[in-house]
Length: 231
Image (cartoon, rainbow, N blue to C red; front, side, top):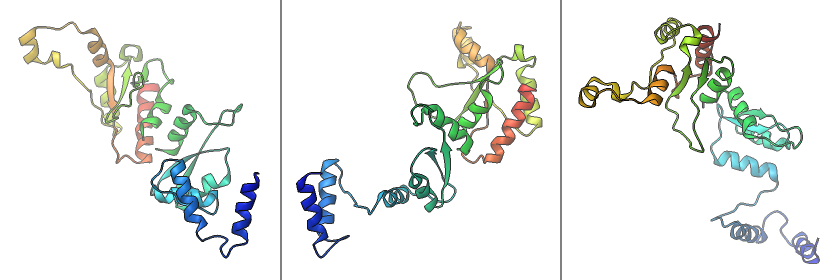
């Protein structure tokens, strides 16, 4: 520690103020300038800072926060102090750090965005079924959850799969019939040779996906899908 630092601490300790006083706003202003922020708030410790940050983003009962399993207690405690639940995330054994795959797995276990749960439950289970993944570095608007099914390999056609899922209370849809197949456009332009669109359409099926789905709803859907596609 530099002599100037020691002198600054001694100045505060021998002043009229220990935890408040003019040095606090001075520190806040200097810190805000250093990090190019509009404002800064000094806290008594890191736990207080995490609790304050948790309140600032509006954490409340019913919310879930992914927290690395290896961290100081306050990381999880601050979440619980707001009434929210903690979802612990695994880490790499060699570094102690989370990866994106670990976070996705934690999302699925925590019952959050519903797409992660679908993918963890369905991908890799059968060579005849896989989910439609985003390409490249894009961030898609997930208003649909689509799976691609090799109906021939499965031994069932799409109508049969849809009817069996419907009998279990799960409605499905096909998005989309190629627009080029619509009678108007076929009459106007003739039959189009679009093999990519054709192959996608022949395999695609959309599962329920909307914000009102509860954890139990998702599990019921997945159980029905397992019964129809994997058993």
